[in-house]
Length: 317
Ligand code: NAD
Ligand code: SER
Image (cartoon, rainbow, N blue to C red; front, side):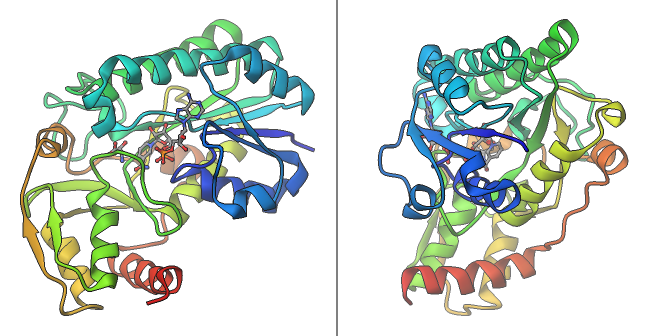
């Protein structure tokens, strides 16, 4: 039986991935960790939770031994918009934190480490359409710099120490359970909250800004599928491109308006625009489809219907 530790478990992905892992492997076998002392009650009540910073390697090692951990899902990170506001802090958490996690996994001879990367590893010199698996990685943001360097570090630990590290380059993720934490694609979540509340949405990117996106259930499935894949079939250890759909902010507005016709949006691009413009509009995920049979389920309209019905319940509207 696997004994799993999740870092950053209180975040947008962790709050859902942890519950999916507990369903699969048993509640007591999945230790959720984060620096957030007051996470969602679902997380606290469904299994063990410890307040641990990834910048504190002794505490990380202590809980890893105490719970006899053999697999880590490493989600703790600083996302793009927050990272641009405090690049030194982002470097510390995203690089030194990752290295602490990889070192503990190596020292404890763990079975596996899963690490999300991001479309932010790409930059203005990457092809804008169908960004390939292997391509130019010259990101223009500190978040992207840390994600690209983090991918290289994962590759290095695989080659040098034989640590079974597996990575995914997620696109922007859309979900209703936990609000996102300081990213550029967050507008694509916030617009649903405004629509359900009947508020005018002020969008911080322009209507024609097109980015790769994915609905959270597919993102969780992707991570679980990659974790289960046979090691011999994995050509990439840094991170696999995974895609679901790409849309412009205007196309998202139109999809939501099919369910909530009264939605009003005003476009007021700010500093997020430059970050969004540095990322590709579409990415090529052939390698993930070939190596571990990745295939998303949701299209944009199916996502909009599901988001709106879940948010109405969550917000009591
Ligand atoms: P999030 O910001 O929602 O959650 C990150 C969590 O990490 C937070 O709960 C925060 O409290 C915690 N954290 C921050 N510093 C910490 C520290 N020092 N020690 C322990 N915990 C700490 O982020 P997310 O969206 O859940 O992202 C998880 C991972 O997925 C990150 O690596 C991110 O780069 C990647 N990713 C996310 C998206 C997305 O759209 N959400 C897209 C691509 C990649
Ligand atoms: N959703 C993330 C962000 O916008 C992409 O990694 O920062």
